[in-house]
Image (cartoon, rainbow, N blue to C red):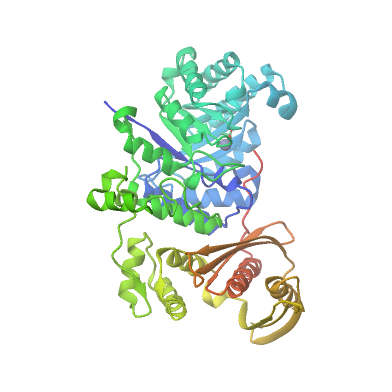
Length: 523
Ligand code: KIV
Ligand code: ZN
């Protein structure tokens, strides 16, 4: 009988620890809802002790996504009572909840980070699991840095954690150091040497991608007996990221005969989930990324194209429709109407409300006036730029006018006029380049103190009429990060829109006193 592999998604916890990523509560909820649609078994919603905003977000997800027929909602806690109490409290509304408690077991972590002896770590692990059982019967214990731990000690800690009531034991390759055969061997060692291992429901693996081996290691873990994989959408996470959900799931799907296992993931939701996470985190997916990259199902060479036209199996190991990427017959342009746009967006995996569709349609028409063909990538940028913006009636700063002078022998100078609460604000500034000049001018006009911390520009498409997709991050005085997107065939205009969108998000959340996005805390 093929074994079922359970998918534990940690996009909202380990994924949110990606540098520069910081999600607002409603964005986390939107991702959690989509993860439930995708069919993940467990959603690790956050690390509640990290901040009150994080605890609130976990509670919201527990309330709204943690239904009886929904996924298990998990929260992370160090092996200390207070963390577990805060996690237990945040998870209360969930019908199925899991406390995930962890402590490091490698000598290097115990000596330099925890400053604890092996005996103390063992005792802390036991106490943490016992304490967590006061809140739920579903307790996961992780031995952080397991792959650099003494296997004898690791097995001893797992045995004690299981005796104390852990129902899942997790084997993390915290620093992405292991090679697949070593990681498989470690999982086998745990399976063979922990005497009470048969009492746990899940033997879990959690791999990081520092050497690009997270997916390979997770598969090696599965082959050695693991039945839960911890992963993130698009593989986002600390440093080089975590095991990518879409890659591990599709490897299981594609090679199930060899691996003899399956997952309950709804594969046709993969592309949609990937796009949502990329849009909300502002982390673009590299074009050559397996499964979800823009080029993953594109064939460039004549020989390949000919082969695929004769029989897709010549060069395609997965039918793109399986992951929710239908072959599209619809090409949009200036004359396309609302129905064509709606059909195309559906094909691309977006389900928009009527209001959102109206807004996207308006922006689509503006773009089509300036560009002959609107590509799928243009539409994705358009949705990211429109749907996830501040609601129209809450926008504080409106761009009225922008004029830039730039060229050889000219000092780049910008003049910008913005409307705010019915008043017109006008200013001019110079800069080292045209975008710098515009940004200095805007910074002069807006009230809210902030700092630009990141600016990325990406060309969507090959020609000189390609759309520029700009993503910026600004930081407020409390260190909260706000992301802005802007798209336009004019790079300066795209950059201006992106900056103003980030400022508008900052102003919106400060005005409404909505808890600002919080980083998931350091683990
Ligand atoms: O990488 C890691 O060790 C973790 C643990 C908290 C599971 O994220
Ligand atoms: Zn991790």
